Image (cartoon, rainbow, N blue to C red):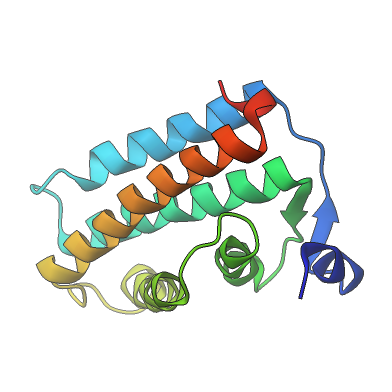
Amino acid sequence: MTLRQWLDNKWLTAHRSNPREIRSMLEIVDRDIRDASNEDLSPDWRLAISYNATLQCALIALAASGYRPNKGGSHHYYAIESMTLTIGAPRDDITAIDAFRKKRNVSDYERAGTISEKEADESLAIAKSTKASLLDWLSQERPDLVP
């Protein structure tokens, strides 16, 4: 599928981005990666923060591509899945990020202490690599938006 087909399916909305928006969103990514690196925080919280950094990367790529996800129960899912169509994220990364999304939901809404240190570290590593891929993609595909 293409992002245009996603728009037709009402999974996305058209959006016009600008360098200021991208810069602000990248600041969130930087903050979250920095905070998720704090090993004094619980693994649950570190995973939630690093997942948010990854989600923001997905939203930045969508915004730079002219879209944003429709709000609703699946907007995180579609944002993460869209990275295969925007920055060319590997399917293995998308699968891992989706697993972290589900684990984050459990730790945020159902039970504390469900995330291991290893999972928190893995989620942080994916956030960092996703940011690097995003920045490479932006510089090639949308240099006009690079702050």
